[in-house]
Amino acid sequence: MSTQKTRLLSQVNPGNRGRMRMAMSKYAALQPGEKLNIAFLGGSITAGQGAVDGQPFPYWAMDILHTVFDKDKLSVHNGAVPGTLSSYMSVCHNVHLPKDADIIFLDYSVNDDYTAVPPMDNKVRRPFERLLRTLLNYPRQPAVVMIHAFAWHRVAGPSGLYWPSSERDFHEFAMYYGIPEISVKASAWRLMHASAKGFNVTRTRADHAGRFQHEIDAELKGDVFYWDVIHPDGSSGHRFMGELVAQYVLDAYADVSASPVTLEDMHARDDALPPPMLPMNYQAASDKCFIGPVFKSICVEPVEGWTWKDEGKDPARPKLGYVTDMAGAVLCVKIDTHTHTHRYVTDTAGAVLRVKIDTMTGGNSTEAVTLEVTYLRSYVNMGRARIECESGCACLPTEVDGHHTDKTSQLYLHEWMATQHKECIVKISVLPETSGPPGHHKFKIAGIMISEGGDRVFNWGAVQMTLEGLKANGAFDIKQWQSGRRSLAELVATGTAPSSALAGSSSSSSSNDERRQIAHR
Image (cartoon, rainbow, N blue to C red; front, side):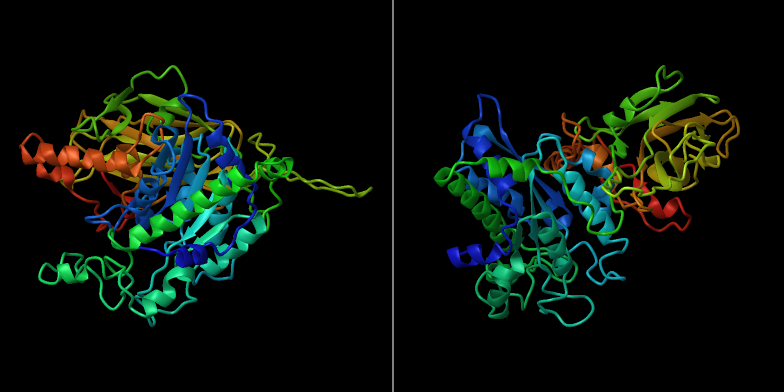
């Protein structure tokens, strides 16, 4: 679908090529059983929305690469989650990205607000920079590449404008950190403006309700770029993006084949990161998102009165968590609530550094962070729990009610504030009091997250999707989740599972917790 010209136009910023060259040189030296691991992170476009009868762009790219590279030596992981911003991934990257990633493609140009104010140093751009810094520090020091999707259609203001995009701000980060960029608008905008075949933006393939327009679909398929006003169509837009990604990887491989890696490339990969571009915007020192099996790993042993349980109706869509039916049952979680890792260096004699220390809790900062616990609320036999900071960190005790009268069973996020400490022990105790039927005290905890810089994890469906799409390596993959959905749909079709099992998330409630509810499908 693309041409050599459009593919080259997309490579708007080569960045520091050292990391990519080192990653591609690894492929040639792979031993039997080893793989070059390519990962994708982003929102709904990367996850494949719009690819209704085609492929998401990561898999278009892999199909092309498999014609050149040995399939057994190349793996792809798609950890993207629809409807999320980079602020979510900044906190929960560890359950969406394998630690052994060699190349990471990152797409948030459409999801992250381009009108964010004040410019750059704001609550939208700060978590994006922290995410970049975190990914660059992953164990294999991977090559991180930004791919910028483009939204021609706009809900507010005229469509087709070239400049309204987060891409401009992201370019500043790319230059600062030497990150390569692939731009859809740089390569396709003129084709869209000319309504070239495959790039036609005068129509979308879906109607306003996101449905096929069957009477004219044969005319639209392969001609229009977008499925709807945001997402590329699987047979055109996604394919085009996949070809841009594949070309970039193939070019890097050709470069290494023609000119082997040098010490300069190794230094480019191994050099320490510069200070943050935005003031004091350091990444977290440790993982901050504990969902699924990784949550079990942070619970303090011995765990008594609680059972690690999968309450899903289908093994392909697990609903893991600690469950108890006992009043008085206690679950303790040990977490590191420090949010930043940095050090101060000086070569000036007489320089003075003043440090503010919390001598009451043993922490090194009195700045509070936001904690969020994922718990089940249902109308059947649920109890209440008290959450408090037992040692290390400090917080005001808070209570969580697992019972509600709605005829639904859903995961919710409850948030509270705590101080920072390397060894924060959070204690969850099931109370004897209950707002449900007397004598019933069921309570389920599915995870806990620590915010960075005041951000919150809250997202409609993101946590539940993550639980349902975890692979054996502990990382969410969109294909794993889709496989589980298909498996459950088959159970519904045969009557083995109720149709409500496929229900979506609800957002009709109004309380602080209810605005963060997540369907417990």
